[in-house]
Length: 455
Image 1 (cartoon, rainbow, N blue to C red):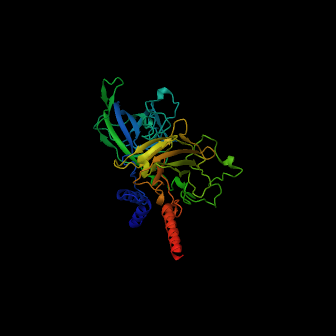
Image 2: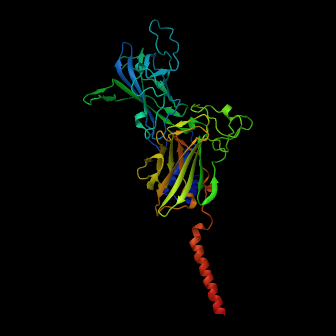
Image 3: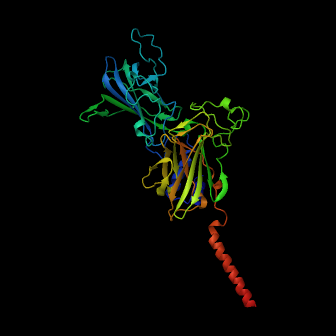
């Protein structure tokens, strides 16, 4: 398996030994369902910081902050859900900036009733528009967290919790255990809480520094294999030098269930309006258009034009999901010519360099208020842009599929690429046009010389 992959990568893409090894490791990871390491964002994670700010008669008041340190993976509506299990018999007296989904059995209390008495509470963010007396800083965004690259200012979310029947000193407090994070579905695995140095806070006038009484952190990492059983996007390819349009692989995200009508939507059906929700309403369960690939999202890479010193690519992202508007979408593309990207139109761009010496990965996302929303399937369900690359004479070629991307992520999920042997190839002989012309002239001159000599 390894030798076969290396042979294909070397012969088809003409990559360096390190790149081939990296691609092999990436392909091998697809067979390991428990792997959560992302080679394009090796340090990406979600960190939950629990800061005890003050002690109370029977417990403490803490501020819990969720930081999204992932470069390109964000949490979209309906937002994050955080859960844990108490180590003792703790209860939550009150909350600000968040709430538990269930109160639990509080029948043993008289007078003041706790906000939540469950042994394993589940907390969600409050919605925008929450009254100010229920808010704290960085709360009330409906659980939506942007990626760190797109908008670090909105990549954190906080809530305040007053905990009772807990310890009242650093030695008697017990950290919660079995943390879980849904964003909004499965995919994240959280480690145990670790006590760290207390957090420090600088006052607004920057003249005083305070610190938490006690702090612990929880780190959560993402695995696409835990998030969903099937992929969520695919890639199609085309070029100006070949009429062939390579579609997404058949059944890339599943196959049509012909025995169950309604499992997908025929865009030409006369009753489509009755099964498609109204614009602006998101539903976590996908309702996709009937296609050969059955993917909610397709990314199309078209090699558009060739100039003397430059070449141009058009990228189109199409939404086939009738149940989802993708807000703050992003695309991560891996191609060796990104070290010479000259201009990009109508998309934002940032170079990702997880391995400092290699600059072959780019993150693309929409311009705010222009195309940062990928609407649900339909006439408006696509966004597009063009990229202009400068040619590097040492590496540039249109042969062997070099002009096509090595890897594409949409919203942090790896998209299914077509098989390399189906890529649009240069027409036969086009790369040998000059040689063929010289051969023809040489043959013609030789024939004329022979005829003249014979005469």
